[in-house]
Length: 498
Image 1: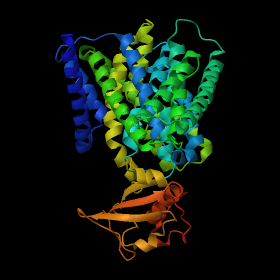
Image 2: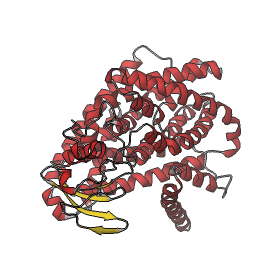
Image 3: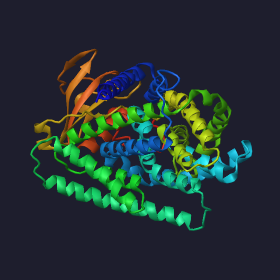
Image 4: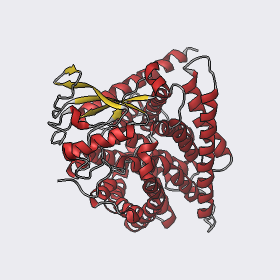
């Protein structure tokens, strides 16, 4: 009992530091996961002296955190955003994964002299993009078209096949020709059961009359975590089942849906903070110096060869413009997931697993610094940004009763929305511009109000009108008041309007 106050004090202090790290990262443009890792290293054996080297416990807690992160990602993903990119996202999470594993494995077998199976294991560990990094970074970029949906689907779906590949390659038994069939079976069963459990959970929650509103978020998260546990116990992909169930639930007409999303987001942040701090605590800085060279070689292979080739292979039949392919190649963000996956061969006692963990840790830090800090710049240089339209998290009864959403957007520099009258926006029925914030002052716009660069707009839209309102706003941003006359409907353009 005497240790309980100390443990709770350390835990609360770490969470508060993690929350402050989010604020600091947004100001300095540094990805917050690096700050979380730094907190873990500082309180570890080289800092405050806390000893922690239990690989099995770290892997188990890491997978538990990943389940919560995937649940948060699925619940907050809008089906209207990912539906146009469904085929693209599935291709990136399957075909691209295979190409990345093979390319990375062959390259590291030749460059580092690794055994071919160990090289493929490195490739599998490093081929998973990180859901936490993607969800936290990409949603604030305001990307055009289906890129956000494709990358969100990739990060939410590719953990499952990659995890199965790592388990197979790290096992002491020989590989069989039936192993790929087993992977396909586990993924298919996981996806189907996840969708079924999500549907059943949504039907139950919409009919239930729970005595307190706070019970709905708990029940929703329990369905997602339960989907993982049940499907995993059936020897199928629990990670895929969790994400699919959360995606179904998040796009159902659940009671207190916005409160549920806010609760899931809070748990997702807590899982991210705990996971990255735990991994920073587990790693030994004294060993990282020896891992720098192989980590840099693997990072170069991923960044220059494996990721671009895997993207080209995955999207080749979707006729994606080269700008979007280039961005997808650069946006393969890595985070905690590769480190957690690297712990799998360590727990099985595979030779060289410790070196893999250290190299992956260094690689994640390097690629996060290189990619995470430059991603907004790359998006702007490629001309892929659009007005940032995001949903404000509001749990108000009047809005819920009429099934309305609040959207906030900013008119960016160079937008053709500058100078457009409010009446010329021609928002669809069910949507209206209710507030404009300009130079720190807010006012209710009239039909003759002209929009300016830097204006922040608050749009109220019913659930049925939201997608059409977003498309119209993007069309006016690209083509001005005559967007409809010019044939711009707000979808993904085949070329950028002049």
